[in-house]
Image (tube, rainbow, N blue to C red):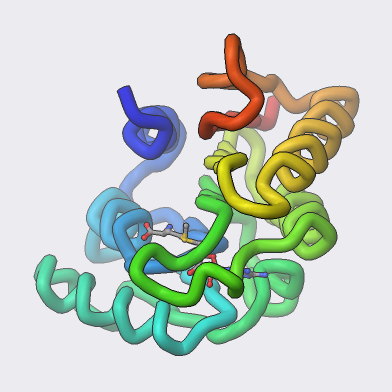
Length: 183
Ligand SMILES: C[S@@+](CC[C@H](N)C(=O)[O-])C[C@H]1O[C@@H](n2cnc3c(N)ncnc32)[C@H](O)[C@@H]1O
């Protein structure tokens, strides 16, 4: 199973209809559409990206999927600042790192912002909520970012997060997923 499918599978177990959730890297909107359908009409998705092009693509994907636009807030801002937008506790935060597929590969998630984003995300997740991080290590900076994500995840595990990883065995260039659940 691909790590993105695994992330969806994990998030499905933690989110109830009507809840608020976050897509920390909207990209082309596949995770945003997934989350918007999961939370349903009474729920809300906060979707962050630093590229306007990504938010335009996400909006188009939402429209094509028949998701009402008022269910999703598209925010042109780094996930490092998510605490300024997300006030109520959320059920899930999804990160899908790297660059915008079909976009400029030079514009991608960077270690420092990613780690701040992960820490900010953990602060806003409710009890029994979930954080997923899909990491890609094949592009420049990807391995360094992967190491930083694992280090940040281990720190959260020391603070009580229950941590699972998928895809780490046998390769240091392949994609992997980290799943962190709050007690
Ligand atoms: C792999 S794509 C995300 C794919 C997306 N989740 C989907 O389902 O289509 C990574 C995205 O992260 C965005 N990004 C890079 N740095 C970011 C940051 N600091 N905050 C939010 N988004 C960022 C990129 O612009 C890119 O669109």
